[in-house]
Image (tube, rainbow, N blue to C red; front, top):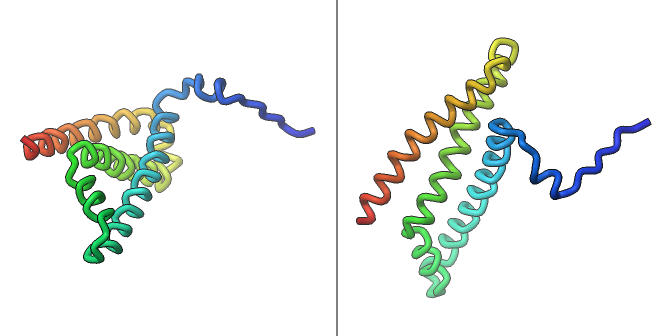
Length: 126
């Protein structure tokens, strides 16, 4: 007898996992976003100085404040969430009972740092 899981896409999208599920998804999206950035960065380094116009396009993307804000979101959230996961994994017997409080603390720290950084990016843009 085996366990059968038949979950449709609509059922999965309606899942209300709250904080832990949101951090799980954002951590994965952040990792993918950083992988795309690194790929873009390597591509820009490869074509720089070869006279290709794609290098100029990639550099224009780099200096775009919207790109910087989105990339900052991905990297900062991935780092802070990774630190939370590491702390909970290092001391699971004592800390796992506090995982929801750790997620709330993570969001407070993330919003404070991210808010300050976004204000700095917008200030330098103006």
